[in-house]
Image (cartoon, rainbow, N blue to C red):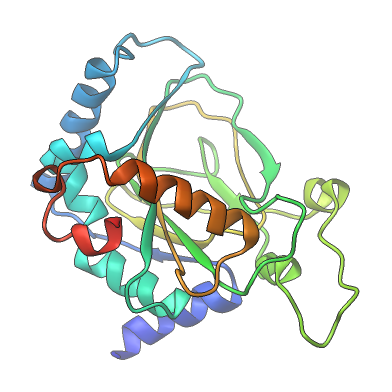
Length: 245
């Protein structure tokens, strides 16, 4: 493992978030933007409405080369495998989002809010941003280290899950980034999105541990695996297939 890779993994483990700039070239970034527009149109969501969030998801996104490149990017897979300590993590989420300003943003929350403590770093979420993001418009904000509040602790048998009040009242730090930056995030770190005043697009997904799932994740993986067995193998890029089923 290189020094840079170790630093990224350590940052996600301790802080819950790390930025990896310049994952795509400018040409690849533009292709991803164009393919996201096409995917929204093909899904019947091409209309641009102020204040709207357009979400497209599912294996069918793999037919767009500019999007598939991101889901199967070797750097994203490598880092996700190291963080989850899973040699062949499961590509759980396949999603792309487009926020049309003005948008109020997203209130504080955590992705693993299912009423149960979960195995540490069971799932890593990533997002490849297609637009510049600043504290003044659409910044992802988070509370460093809070993912550890959601994890099973063998030394604390009566540990409780975080309360909604705790999550809402915590102090959130904004992230500034340029288009093409990958944000790696422990799925369970507390986070939010500030009000959006400029176009905000990103491709996102999550890689999950197969060997240490929570009850919720175990059920979700079983459901998705059953659905994915109906997807023709040739429709999934070769680089993604080992993580898809």
